[in-house]
Length: 395
Image (cartoon, rainbow, N blue to C red; front, side, top):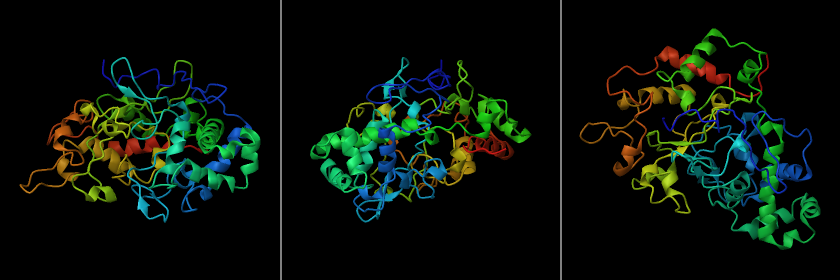
């Protein structure tokens, strides 16, 4: 069976997760709390507080904008940060929605890397993920946990923080920093805006909306193994328990993307962002077969994004989809030429890792000069369907 089989984990079946100290579970389309707990309400304040950054101008909400499905509302390939807000990040900021259904990183029974947070899955949980932006020199750029907590101590909600976590908590920076991350996790678990399931497609699944003829054609192309084959990684069907799909199987793929020269780090021709095999901990450094693999994101709200893929190389959904189906049939459209006039295919990978690129599954299994899996009109149909995945549908 293909590693891209429809897996119960992400196809909408019950997906339990531990929601922090004290436990609890959430499943796809499970109702979020109608009123935030004290910890979650505190997490919301932290999420929106730009004073916790070295610049005083960047909060979690700066990159995860609620009005744009908790993703960036600009077309930058990576967001700016640092003490003076003049440092470019290395990867695009993904949406923070529907992450409550993710899991810690693991290899499944077939050896497929699955789960984890960030594009390379290096964080084990939303709490673990929440720590990093505060200390990343290209983001909020604090020097250490004590620096973050000193800023927190000056926040208007500092007394509430002490009331919830203990009167002496701010005198223990490491513990306080961990509680900040815990509060952020609870906020993302409890606030329904992080998992609203309010798209037209959700209403269609509930029997309360009808897809147009074009949207129906797009859905068929999305599901067809011989056409878009999108559902192989982004399951679209309800789970056996009736839960709604998350449009990701939480695995990883190597797409052989073009190098994005808008990223400052790519000015160095010796630099390559290798994803899974180059995680900071070095735990997968010997898995060179994983070099170039990045997380498969949810396609919910994909039509709202301003840039696509981990390196933000494309700025429209149609362009991204066209790349999928023409990468191998028409590589000259996507990659630069070498000095000898040949196409420098997969130019964002070292030569030694180019064999890792997915070239066996549709629509990547076409050869140079063959007809792409989707025509231009079919790509338009697919775009129309993907637009039904945007939250906030109003009939």
